[in-house]
Image (cartoon, rainbow, N blue to C red; front, side, top):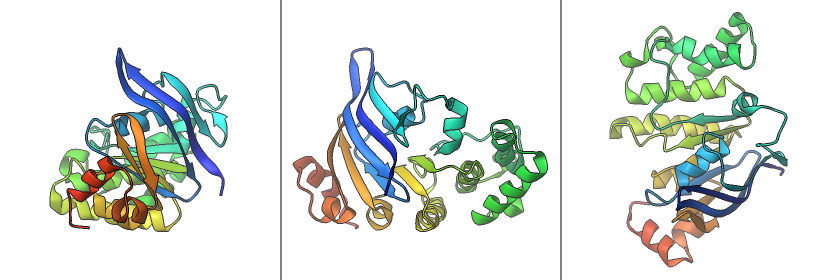
Length: 245
């Protein structure tokens, strides 16, 4: 399988503080890769670099083998291909659910409104949100907002979706509804890179798991490798803290 995204010696520092140090890994088409690790290990910064919300200090991010920082594609076209779902939803509060799912399509992909609406409806139905198309974000629960955010990302026909702790801002009873949608996406073959604290999701849904600590990748492997037979002491301590999986 071809690599869709590849990180080569990626580094990021803020002032004197190194947040990412020499990160190397790739994501293949159709893979679900979960990134786990304690807070402050650099997981979200890495995703933000991949989406060019942060500019890397060093190294390269390759999309189908091409350096995204020098690619002729342009940032907005690249972000349409590499969608992102944030922990805080990032919906436009002044727009309805359907408008939130149409705006990127009409502005970036230049689709006409009728086409954009049809595609938005298709994905809102997929995440179970069609009854709420005329609602504003403030009228929705956290789980509903996150499902809209996922539909919005899907409506751009991305090749990859990055999820930055998509359940961490949700009440516990809403976590399941979002993870169910993500599991369905994974099963449908969507390429996904997921920063998560949901260990059961990482273990049961991922093809590969990456454990990060202090800005480096300490261990990487199948869910069985990482959860059942971790080699690194830090990995053992991290996954051993939660005996529920």
